[in-house]
Amino acid sequence: MTTPVLASAAISGSGGRVGGCKRVVRAVALLAVLVTVSSGCASGTAASHDSEAVETPTSTTRTPRVVDDSGRPQITFDPCLDIPDEVLVENEYDPRSKESTDYPMGTYSFIGCRFKGTLRIPGVLRRYGLSVLSGNVTMEEEKAKNDHIATESRVNGRRALIELDPEMRGSCAYVLEAEFGIVIVSRTYHADHSQEIPRAEWCAGFDQFVSAVEPLIPS
Image (tube, helix red, strand yellow):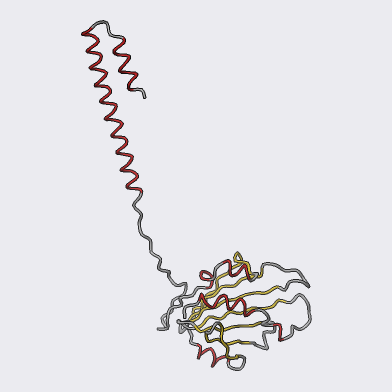
């Protein structure tokens, strides 16, 4: 908008035909310089945007938290990363309470995550602790170890075991078969009273959470 003003001022201020023509020539030359500079800035800006638009690709490969030299499969389900927050919240567990647990045993490994319940109202809402462990041991090995407390079952069609250990009263564990081994989903009922927890309540309602986790596990 300033360039036409510079040109008109030079013409109106001329003392005669020759002087006016010289001023017009100078004004036209100035206008040409301004246009050239403006064009250079515009092209430089475009080049800058083009360079910013180039994105460096990033790798999506996850490094397992625990790797052993046993020759067993790598564990590809990380409970701390692969269980969505909304699944935890819907089942009254607090995603912010997650705590990773690793068990590199040399000949096999487990990686896990612990969670706490979101609410506790004595006499109204029960307080539970949740633990999810992924291990590269086989279902047959787990069954041979805990056959005395395990019952064969299915979760959404997937092979599973339900384990109730009489020495861990109030605890219920589901063992789900996975492509790399097993996933153990266990819950402990932390009673707010001194009475014994009936065996029928150890697993009450827990199958709903296990059924929500099952589709997340590689099969």
